[in-house]
Length: 310
Image 1 (cartoon, helix red, strand yellow):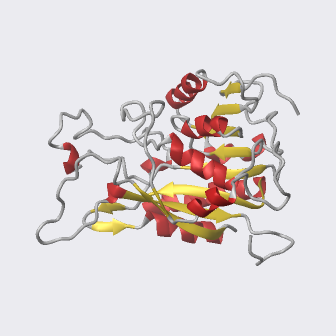
Image 2 (cartoon, one colour):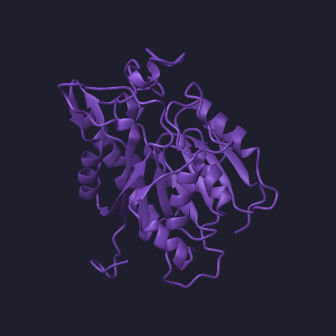
C-alpha cells in the first residue's frame, strides 16, 4: 500500500475519523525472518544494559508551557529501533507533543499518535512539518480518545505500542519541586496537568487510572502482532508522604489484561535534571523521583508457541 501524503492530521469530522487508516505496516528491510529488529550484534549488546541514559537535542521540546511532560527524541528512537524493523507500524496512545512521531520518522518507521487535546495535535503538526524529503514512511496525528483506537487498525498490524502516558493525578496539583525554587521559573506553584477534561487520565485517582489504562490496553492487545512489544514510560510519585507505586499497579493490571512483562528498564535521568533540592533531611530519606523513571516492557504472548522465549 502506498500513501502519497507522509503527514496526516485527523480530527473529528475528518473522513478518516474512527475509520481504518491507509498506512503501511510491513517491514521494508532485509533482516532475517525471526529478527525482532534491524540492530547489529554490537548495537544489541549495548542495549542489553538495563539502565539507559539520554541527552536532549535541538529539536526536543523542553518548555513545560508547551507540554508538561516530554521525553527526549533519543529515548523514543531507542525503543523504536529495539522493538521494530524499518517500515513497521508504531502507535502512541498518548502522543502529546509528537516526539514518538518524530522519532519514528527518523528511524524509517510508520507511526500513528493519539491525543485528546487539540493544542497537542497542533504541536505534532508543527513538528512534523519540519520533515525529511527523503523519508517515505508516514506519520499520522489523530485528535481522539485512546479508548477509540481499535477502529483505526486491522488486527495484528502493529509492531510496537510505545508511550509515556498521563500519570494518574501526579501533575494535577501545585508544583512544589524544591529544585526549582532557587530559579526564576514560571511553573513553580502552578498546576501542570494536561487538562481538566474528565476523560483525561491525568485527572484520575490511582485506582480509577489503573482500571482505565487496563481497559485501553486490553482493547489494544489484538492490534499487536504476536510477540510484538508494548513499552510504557512511567514514574512513581509521592502523595501525602507515601510512595505511590504507579509502575507496580500498571504491571499487575496489564498482566490481568493479557500482556506478559518481559523487562523493566531504568531511565537514568541524572544527566538532564536541574539542580537537585534537598528532601526529607535529616529525618525522612526520600529518593529523588525526578532522577529516574521506569520503562515497562511487555509483549503480546505468542499464540502458537506460548511460553517459548523470544
